[in-house]
Length: 380
Image (cartoon, rainbow, N blue to C red; front, side, top):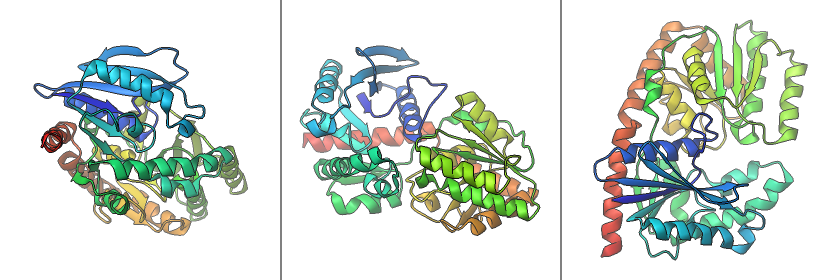
């Protein structure tokens, strides 16, 4: 079977930015290791002058130039032509799209069986965008998203939360399959630095970063010993300024470090060094960082919102705090920081869940079964 995987896909495997890129890369790699499966990964790259075709491992990678200027207003006409040309050369048996805005219009009229996996809900996330550019783009992206759901015949959902969000907009056949995890995260050595807290994600309002900084202030007042490492890209200057202002007012400079993005190897080292991972987001589907931390044997603290409760087993693999409540977040963090045995038991439980539900080989085999069903439905 020849499979084309479309979506955000990393050119630099040592510096993967965003959970979607991590998911598409890991799935493509895992699929390529199955018998009689040929995998092609296609992704748009802004600033690229001409298409690039490479081979990484057993995956054929195709990097296609993207003309995003007014692209949405023109139904991505330029990008559609470029991607269609590559697809005609590949002649895949099935196309698997990751995302619900830019890539679906490129395959609607291809005549090739296709299936899509949503990653987040634009309509929900748009309300949390604070930049002018983000607010202007949101209505158009939300339209593309709803259009994709309406046109799709088949959709893969990573959990029941995403299914509940999308179901009102589609009549597509639904398949539930978890995202694939890089199995190397199971091999991260535990070199815990007591009191070390890790956050991984973009520094945006949707991720609830400000609440974690406020929780840090509460922990400091209580005399808890800790240090938070923030790993992530700054994309909204005003929001970042509010974070720094909160750090200044609460005198948290000795308790917080801003690491920006880091290479994959350094990220794994940070997972090994941390006592726990915290993700205080409002909106998530299936957060890759939680699964990575669980695979590394680390407990997680998340919020009781969106898809996070579908990943964290509250009281077993970590704790759920009330979204937007810094005190609730601080309480859960303090419980774990002050109880080494609890951290260890939750870490073991999280690892077991990650092995059972997110291991790449098993996820790839399940995807292949779904692809066969989709192709058969299209033929009939």
